Image (cartoon, rainbow, N blue to C red; front, side, top):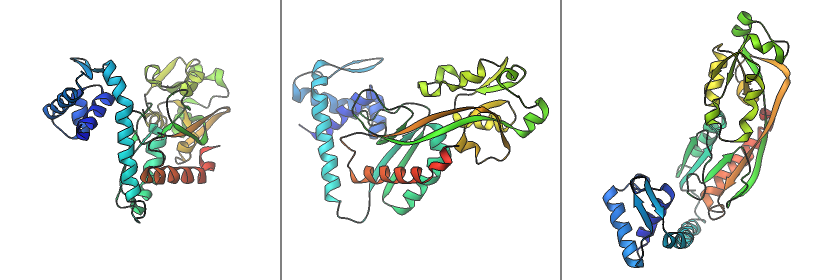
Length: 294
């Protein structure tokens, strides 16, 4: 059995389609399909039901999947062990994180890690979504909830707080609300419900339910910039607002506390390059803990 064909099988299983697997592997569509055909011939069984909507694992594919993942893990561990005594940390580590933390904090500090390890390639993916470790969408993921199921090594990274802010220019024109009941005369900046991917983001309704006018923006950074531009009053991360003296905290009685969790897959948790990134993030975020909590 050719390992290259198993790697193709894993990519198709994780992407759910041959075309997506081809992009992930840097191969053309025909090569991926040919290698998949060769693997199915070797095993004497179809591994996917392939259709226009994608490729779904058959019963044989489901049985093969854990073995293929185990082989992949052993290959990664072997490569890590052979380079463990070398001074350099090499390879690629993808970090998936919520857009606010990723864009406003991790983009700054991960650059330092990249400078310290020239052979390490850090891929930062700051998106408002949940990252799947089993599908290798990320090697290290930061989540707003500890996963209730699935295989993951979980550590609480830090708690953080959110408060209500407005631009000084907005308050000068519209006045400062004395309480939540005063929001009926203001514009409130909130998220878009259809893109709220976790219950940890449920705080927007606190203001939105009291305002007649709203400006909705799907994304933490977009909401921050909208509030800074004077679009209205919004709930912002305190660590983000601290960098902008043009923002004024209002309604101090309204505050929310949430958590960030650091997730790694147990099969790759101890890989040298993953461990270096995990340790760096843990130390840097905890060193700046005061920045995250008001």
